[in-house]
Image 1 (cartoon, rainbow, N blue to C red):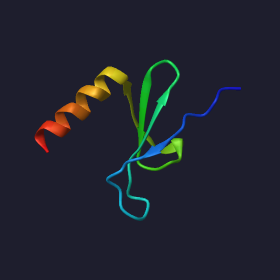
Image 2 (cartoon, one colour):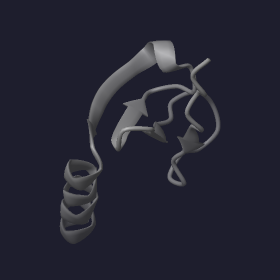
Image 3 (cartoon, one colour):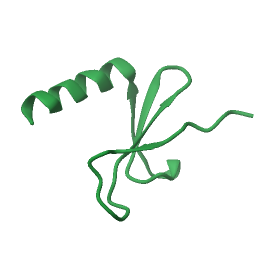
Image 4 (tube, rainbow, N blue to C red):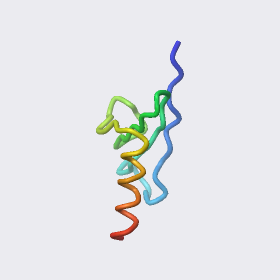
Length: 61
């Protein structure tokens, strides 16, 4: 049995379902979903690419 990733809710979310969830999975993938349900997965990328994305977002505000 494969363990399910631990989804974390963005700290910038308000109340309700309009939030972004992120999970780091075995194999160094980062999964991004619009809800805690992995069936709503919208993006899977490498940890390095995710770190580059976050760095760019933080730099541009």
